[in-house]
Length: 408
Image (cartoon, rainbow, N blue to C red; front, side, top):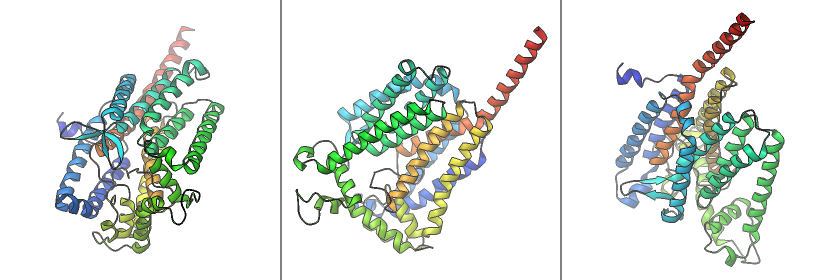
């Protein structure tokens, strides 16, 4: 068998089609929105076109290879991957590179690596492995639920220091996976209530704490500025008039709204964006606003439909094999990607505070884009093998019943 035949896409063809469309659309959008990068670093926009295209090619090739590996093989090494992720996250906190005020990257000389991308996959695989291993003991809080929740919380806390939005999305995804894995709803409600109370108290602390108390503490000032910019809250006791921090932080959100408003229903046309020259993160966090400005609201809604369609195709996996824990891999990883996409779009249209989350497959990226393809490779592996596994399990159960009948 040739390598071309070996890597030929198998499984849900619609998923591959969606991935291809979003990747190519992202390539065009990055090329159009990289003018600010081109001006800053004195590179031609063609340079960023080829750079992003190279990452897409590498990522797509890796995805095709991973989708040929049975997803059960990744379950066996999930604990090892989890401990590696701890080491990477701690190393990032201690020795990471600070970019745009956040220490999220490890530098290896010729490339930088965002450890949270690795950790997201590792903790989800570990969660699913635990649910599969102890599927008959999920009522045992001390043996199963508390230790699992401890690993989830530790991972999210290590990520949250410089990437709070990613940590929150990851935590919600893990809770969803636990729900689908048959963990009692009452346990999850209690976890959710505790998490919600903590989040509200933390937000209130950021809003009302004296500025000197949070000054220089991690990204507290950034988080406060984003909350105040979104809620229009001003601490008048600290400062009168317009809050300067809020004004600075709302700059991107304001120009994103301008881009969407001026794009109209049909857009200005590819490469005709004006706001790309004002938005510093036009190629990343706010690329959806540039897409609507250039392609219009109708095609912007179509992009939203593509992500939702991808999630729908993943849900079909559960319908085909409702008892297979491979389905949890696909649904958990897909939900995380789609939720990130929805939050990114909500930020662009002003429905959510600025988070720093990129648009999967579309925003400019290096290792983050490649890890997105790795995640998609795992999903496609499930799509490729789960139906066959379900049929094999059904045949095994039939053979077992026949053997029992013959024996009796």
